[in-house]
Length: 396
Image 1 (spheres, rainbow, N blue to C red):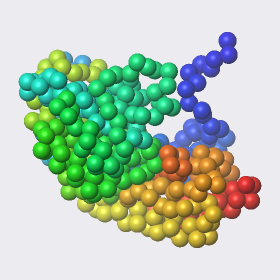
Image 2 (cartoon, one colour; image 1 turned 135 degrees about the horizontal axis):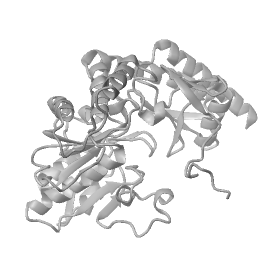
Image 3 (cartoon, rainbow, N blue to C red; image 1 turned 180 degrees about the vertical axis):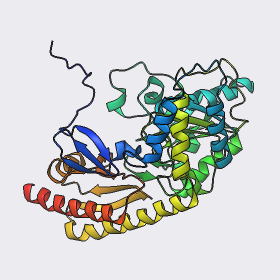
């Protein structure tokens, strides 16, 4: 037998963490890494945050799981807090971002079904998007690396160019249910929607009776310095998928919706065995207590500006390697010149300088630190990036 006990679907590197402390990961040989990947934007409070640790320990000793056939005082309380602070009127809790997007798609289609327009099933999505790895979510992308070998995919999706309002407008027809879009693409290259594009999608939905579905799995939950990224654009969605930061490392997601958009989601239309379990709800409350307040969010914005300015100052010193900085808040990307490859540079930083980052589309290095970083962590990141750039240039 040659296959590994863990199904080999990940190209795992040599970093083997066994412990985390704040903004650092520690490997099984005691090596330390500055973690500016955060589990791909998940560990917003870093590793081992006392509030999260206490919430897990206390709730695990009390009640971890019961069937959703029973009442959920924990879920009701956390959902009410999310509703109070967002556009939404109702919440469905999931275990992941892909599940949250699946729920969002089902909610949109069901809406038109109960409104007497069952033909309105088409979801318009956008190039370079990443919505998850389920059959439904890969059907909403145009990326061969996610689709190849899994056909036939689900029908009812049309992919058009991102940030192209004219293309989105042209794709609308009598079968269209709505748009599915990331306000800021993460996997696709840390690319923000233009203001014209996102506000234009909102207007199209209003004018044609469609639903705007936002995927804020990566860009949401304080990552950009506001609770959710769409707040930067002055619009609200009808449905929104959330995950990653909501649990600070604990597996959790959520689908948020207005009462109107969720009118078709009645008893029996959707479900999840583990979704909204008491342990997840306790963690979600703890993360929200720490991160979703004006002081914390203002600090994320300030640290994001400081990190961005420091990255921009790097470019003139390594201008044949680095091209530009993109992104918002602490969701930043460093675009490399064509002469270098982002995946190779990420590996170089990791293996030679103990700095963890993540590659993305459009030859971008994703920089996604915990939202609790201090100035010392920013300085250490820049030092490692600069040293890594020099070494990488010398090796090239």
